[in-house]
Length: 79
Image (cartoon, rainbow, N blue to C red; front, side):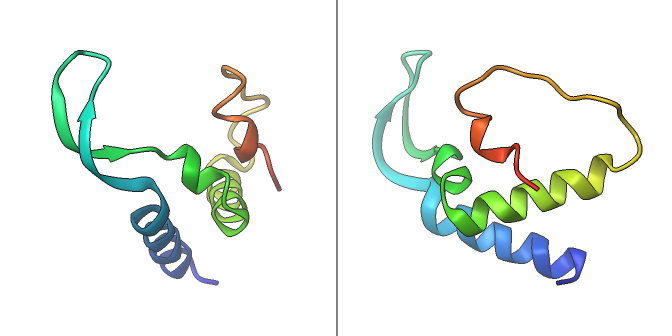
């Protein structure tokens, strides 16, 4: 899959799985009628694969290690 194709497919998954519509109270206390829960895309098997592949392409050979908080990022350590 080309880089463009990968990005477009990932965008489709995010739009389908991670963009939620409704009434949400944000951590700031503000209200929103749209909420992005990207964990839903990272927990999707194809989404996790595509995110891992894209991250690998972006960092390949440029860094020695990556670290971050555990929990939400756990599913994207693939590839």
